[in-house]
Length: 494
Image 1 (cartoon, rainbow, N blue to C red):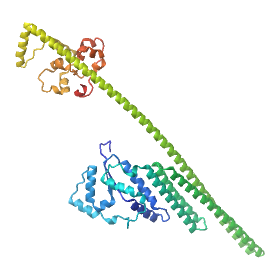
Image 2 (spheres, rainbow, N blue to C red; image 1 turned 180 degrees about the vertical axis):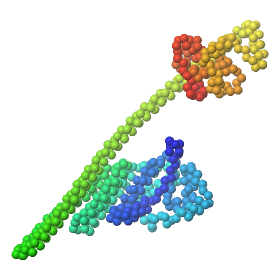
Image 3 (cartoon, helix red, strand yellow; image 1 turned 90 degrees about the vertical axis):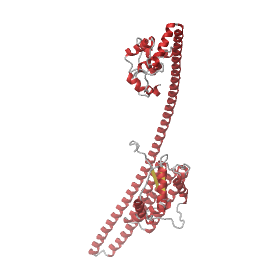
Image 4 (cartoon, rainbow, N blue to C red; image 1 turned 135 degrees about the vertical axis):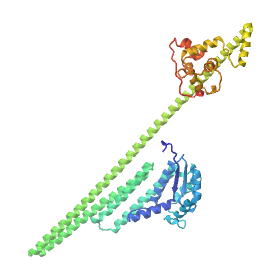
């Protein structure tokens, strides 16, 4: 959007954390009846999304909008949002009628009743959001307090883990004698722990505290220990069943030793028992495989933690390098600014010297004119021609004019367009340059930059001499370099 020249404006809608947590719990338990969704889990999601959105929209035009405020007074809310982000939301009567018909309190499925609050630790953030509604640029909110946020995350994750433990214990009590079918409970438990690992990864990306990850790791280890215990119980029950059924089989064989049909039936029962024992052994092997998969998942989580720590160190290192580069660039810019100031000061002194030299030359010429009768007549003739708007230049001026004209470096059209103050001026552009422009360090054409020539050769400034005439008299023979005029405005060049 910024590359296209578009400005990004943000409208930040929000609901209270208790309503969001209740909505998530209702939705998840309807889809997955045995899932564990305490209010703390929904509060963690609410806090993360609100914090990320607030941080991402800082220093941008933004407005905060509560669900309750929109339902209560949508006209006042839209007027406030329009003023805060500087965007016109004008609407007609037909649009207002349509909005009134659309907005309905029945759309709000969760509402706090009788002041019930399940997540009191998030009340301060709700108050901060209400103040941000009035002052979107306010910076005193708690979303920047990383310590407080990590403390809440730690406590809520602990409560979530405890809820998972209670759920698993209840499932174990409801199904006292595990069977191959009952192993789905363990599979469900792994599903819940995978969800918990997803929440841990979210916390790591945001800089969550390490104790939360350690507690979750301990909870995973405890769950794995319980799975191993369940396997041992299964094996013991299998051995006991085998022993009991073998004894019963031996008694049947002893009591029906002479009966071949009974013996054949006993053999069939033995085969059936062996088949069940094989199935039990297969179930035990499957449980062992699930235990190995859980160990492998735990190893992957630990590797992800180490990778995240390494990436964080790399990001910190790159940030330090960029800060050093920025400091170096700032010092370089300061040095260039100081050098530019010194150059401007030298050019100003150089222009002052040229003006003083020209003034002294004019005063000397005036003294010579006053001493000579012929000069007096020339002055009278000059005053007469002044009234007729005709200028009689001195021989020195004519010689300088001829020198400039024959150089091929003077461009009359460019000189007038580049120096906008000459518009409407009745003097010939080349006469203006010879009489005034050269001393004012104006460039005669695009091929010769007077200021750059003076900056390149210090002896021209020390003399002082006008850049173009120095080049035409001496610099050209000496092989000195000339510089074209850069694409700057005349005021910037002068």
